[in-house]
Each structure stands twice: as C-alpha cells, then as structure tokens.
Image 1: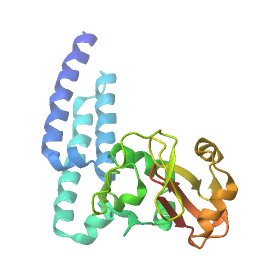
Image 2: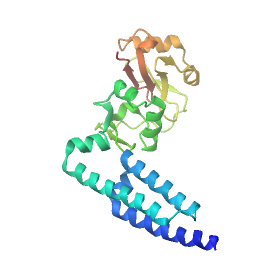
Image 3: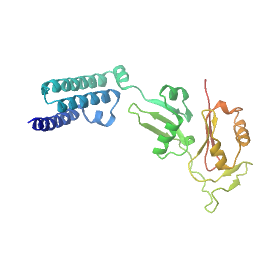
Image 4: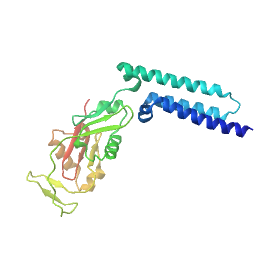
Length: 238
C-alpha cells in the first residue's frame, strides 16, 4: 500500500511541477536568474519531501509550492513594471572588458578570474583577448562577447614552419607558433612555461613590456601574444 502511495504521489508531483514551470514562463526557464534559481530549488526540495514521506498530508506540500509560484509571478510582474525592483532582484550586467580594456575592479567584485574569462572566451570561439571590444557578464552568468571590427588580416604565407620567425620590416620578429594566444603574464606573475615554449626569456619579455611603458612584471595584470607576434597588455589599476 505504501509503495502505491509513493507511486501516485510521484505522478501527481510530476504534473504539478510541470504546470508550475509552465506558469513561471519561458523567460524564467531560459534565463534562470538568482531569484528563479532559489524558487526552483525550494520547489524541488518540497517535492522530494512529499514523495519521501507518505505519511505527510499532500496538501502540506502543495500549499508551499503554490505559494512560491504566486510569489514568483507577482514579483515577475513587479520587476516588469519597475526598473529599480528589476535591478534589485535580477541584478545588473557586469562589463568585464569595456572598450578593449579589462575591468579589473569588476572582475574582483564578481570574483571572476582570468582563467574564467579566457575559458568563456574560448567557448565562444574567441581566441585572442585583444580582439574583444566588450565582454559582458550577464545576470544569468553567461558571457556576452562583442569583438572589435577590424580589417581582414593579411594572408600569411602557407608554407612556413610553425616555429619559424620572420621580420615584418619593423625589426621585431613575428612568431609563427600554432595554437591559441599564449598568456605571458597573469596577475603580475610571469608564465615561464609559455616563455620556454616560445624559446624566449624573461629578459626578452622585460624589453617587450618596457617598450609599452611598463617597467615591472608586477605592474601587469594580463599580457599575451598571438602567433603573429601581436602582444596584448593590460596594466594593473589601483
């Protein structure tokens, strides 16, 4: 008898949760903001209690679930009409890269590391941070990326060894290693392993950053170089 009770309760709760999610709307299901996430977790926990305890009157579980849905619908309507309420409940997007410059203060505020940023850029097929004009961390936790509008790069010679270098007329060699841009400095720390892959030393890197007006590795928040030798450098800001 108890097994049958668990069975029909499971079926009932399934349809109740299904209806609840439909009432919450497509926006909540697709976006799932912090507020929506809290509501979803609470509903899931209540549903488990109802199924797990056959002795618990089912109305004791359905009433809190209906209450949560009503709260969500009312607050969704309030945030739709009131911008301040919307900002308080849903939060605001955070600009991690703005006009091509890393926003270090916002990254610290969001506890967002350089590794997190690089990973999400790669997930969006952006291999070079220097190509990013804006990177916005949305309230849903997703990263929106807007790349810079630049002229198409000149076609590189096809027949060239991956590790070869050539002079582009400026006196500086252009690197032809394959792969993603290599981080050389991250939060003031030199990535010696990547320098070794390039066959370069800290002395060479020191000269490169000095040419950009930086005289200490600790002053650099992020520095990388791509296969064409283009260096991206962002200084720390107090």
